[in-house]
Length: 490
Ligand SMILES: NC(=O)c1ccc[n+]([C@@H]2O[C@H](COP(=O)([O-])OP(=O)(O)OC[C@H]3O[C@@H](n4cnc5c(N)ncnc54)[C@H](O)[C@@H]3O)[C@@H](O)[C@H]2O)c1
Image (cartoon, rainbow, N blue to C red):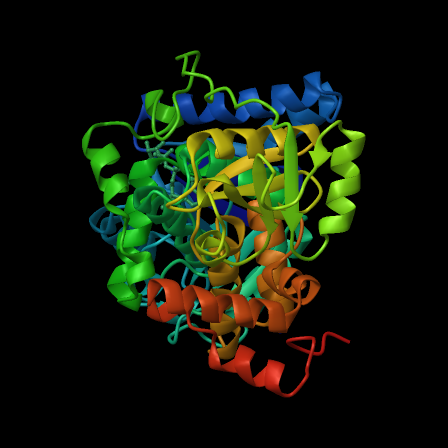
């Protein structure tokens, strides 16, 4: 028979714990919220008050509803008040020694049948379970920030978790309005493992000089349709937290893509932690930054080469830019998703050649080769603006910016699925709900086309020789077999 959870304890009422307490109280459960001392308890109560007051002022909650929610939470400084709890969720700082001390105490205080859960983002749930005499009743319950808003909960079962426990916790998550995804205990679970790999890779592309911070952010936001660019998101998560999660991922995977990019360490050491310290990759809180350099001037004439050239020429003539042949034109644009330097090498005055890769409806990557002049690159940027798109300056490297970041992320998702860690629909749901992505990696993979991504990965591997860019063997086999979906989701 499955367990019933009526009283839930939350230990640590900081950023996460206060939100988690609110989630359960909103769903009608009795909550016991525990903090270290009276001052921290007041702070925790303040978090819940502000959050529920905000909901009232936005018309999402009545004043009576808010009072009921608050009435369901007993705020206390004593762990002893958890003796009747059916489930206790720990949300104290991410330090293993703190968790060890707490779980040792919880094990003594809580009734024998109570389930103990940790909200840890990166520590081993298995290790935390081993601090208790009830490892069979310990799971991860990983909420996302802000907990009252974000629907995803990763429920983590370890090799020691007893049958039925993770299922019951997942059912509880559903009951309080969340979407659970149940996974095993691997560093980063689904979301942080896929997300931090991608964010770290963006930092590496910046260090390699493939594109600037703002161009990479614009490319992923406007080109790939993500809610935020990678550097804006790293600043939001906190560079110290991001660095630490990468370290933990690398510790387990030994995969170089998880080894924190040196620029992360440098910024953290300098105390530039992102939004919380006012500056990280970007300056925040009113600190002004130089505007992106103004573009060049629209060229008198352009020559467009490559697939889709005719359409682009007619769009350009509508925008007042004349077409000319390759000998005469001020700028030669090569429409391409692969490096363009070989075209430049064949051209008289190769400094006029610029690659152009149209991404989605809003962005065009403007690709400079080692031969491209600054004037030609600037003029090509103006051409892109005249087309109503945002130009993203990129070096002439495989994948340019968007595909170089997107394809390895999709490849990681295929490898994760192939390892049996999670199903394709669960990975999709985790990335959609945990990161606010418009589509999960498998939905994106199938929309772009498995063969296109496989071929793009091959090119990336050939360029960077990064082992994890080589197409996952499963992706290769699916393409060879002519399969267009990764898993039958019928
Ligand atoms: N912040 C996030 O975005 C996020 C997202 C998911 C998971 N997490 C994880 O959630 C956990 C908490 O993170 P946070 O950002 O809410 O931290 P936080 O620092 O905002 O809050 C931690 C709270 O725990 C309290 N505390 C410390 N020791 C305690 C003890 N022994 N007993 C009771 N209370 C204690 C502190 O007073 C503080 O209020 C960490 O494991 C973190 O990795 C954080």
